[in-house]
Image 1 (cartoon, rainbow, N blue to C red):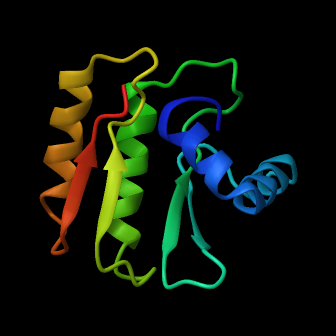
Image 2: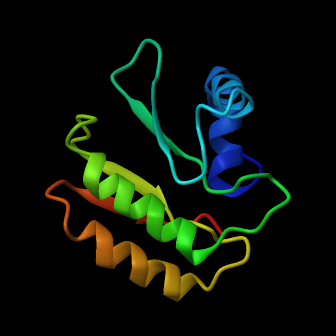
Length: 119
């Protein structure tokens, strides 16, 4: 959780960041995994994804693909009724290639989905 949308959420929900860091440290949240955070005093949830093994590493297309496959497989189980994503992996990946991957996978979902560009 270092830049872009991740940094914005870290600032808005510091307790979420603390729990995310704890889960990563304990190796309970691994590369490609999803974690749904319940926002206290609200009816919002924030979907967190482990997009890199270490903050110094670069995101890969394989990881983006795995995250999207996991989301498509799990969104109903997690009770997700709508979702907004940033464009994943904007630090070092080709934006259009990532968007193509996102559209390819997310069009399979039967919920409202929005994609935002935080760059």
